[in-house]
Image (cartoon, rainbow, N blue to C red; front, side, top):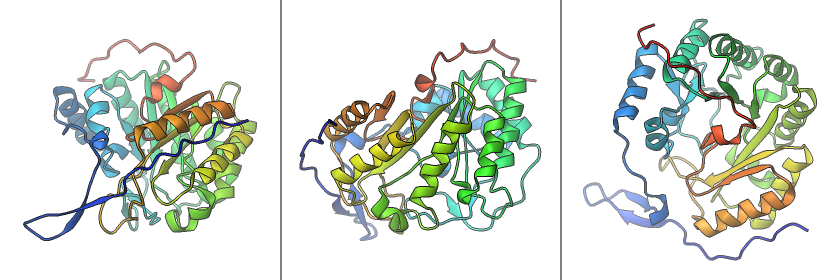
Length: 319
């Protein structure tokens, strides 16, 4: 019998007016406050990304953990440009017509992995519905290049739904990532409101196929956000569906509205509720559950790799 969710009354968004403009903003509860980034390692990572012409989802999606992660020398790389072909109502990434793929991007990304001496790397992308393979080949190329240049680094790919093109998924799996991550984002009832253009069952099918077709030892992972109008029962159903396709690792975090043009926050979840989500997930059989107000897909990702290899030896940054 699965663990029921606690019944905790949490506060909804609290409106606050900026005196200078009269514009209404939402005041966040204290557990969502983070320090502004700017440490030495943060500036080093930022400089490296700029120098190599790379993008990170940390910046493009306004991740609240960017300061913490970058200060520890980790980042989630965003490939295939920084313009997405879809308009998901929760996402801060720019929507529009993307540029052609850069054939040198895999090599530059592998250089960044080596210079940062990463034990674990996470690679994600914008949606590229304009490409025949929806970007699957670009993921495979990055994995192969990273394997060749940094064999001791474990590789996690956070992939889009590929518009249900499962042959593209097979190409990614053949490149042998260590973790295949695909976010569900929200419950079935809210899919078309939150993720127009996506399909709940296609996402489950992708995770199911990854489990069946992936190499032995491949870890499958998924995540969702809360605070967009879902119920506790719907969250339980979502977790049951994920366990039904043998998904092993789960992440859950608070939705934070990037701007007034994005989906409004229905309510903030208290830290105790995230602890309860973790208990419910573990009771259902997830091997690892990362659940908290500021948790995002790649938060503490290195800790989720079974028997992760040690870091490679330091390399010459000038190379």
